[in-house]
Image (cartoon, rainbow, N blue to C red; front, side, top):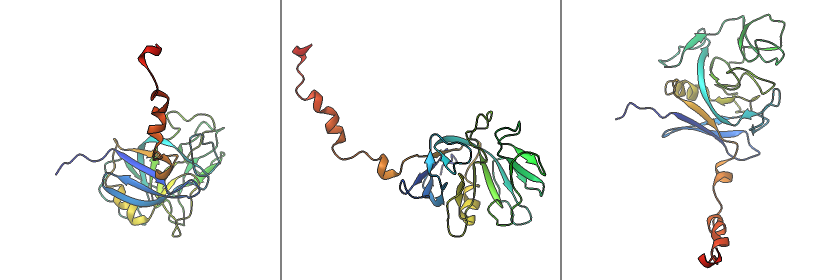
Length: 205
């Protein structure tokens, strides 16, 4: 058995009007949910959308008072009560971990609802952060009803605990803007592409 792990975590929604999705890593697959604003290639701060594209995974943050972190290969750090994540494009700390209270708009990382008991930071708009293209894109724990996120990708608690053991610095999350059905070529499309050449004669050159 090979020790080489798959390097692409593929996230694809069920349909254009659904926030439910599947995340696939090699032969493993988990149910997940994306942003209420859908999956967008032109994401901006506050639109509630999950950014389409392929991005690295940076760090793991977790509540060590609520779970025992399994063996993982990404850098990890416990979340503290004064940890926040800046979501204010005007701040020099935009899309960075910050200490709170803080003068800039931010998310609180120490949450009571359990959604951030375990999270993985997605390397979106962070090298360096620019414009108002969005911040705080994580893989994190989903709500019990699998409701949509504000732009992150969320998993059932047990599934995320399994997933973090299978990813590493080489893993990239690839979020598709289209569902599998929308990406699949329609029957006959390739034939249609060839029709202009059916009557082509070399003598026409």
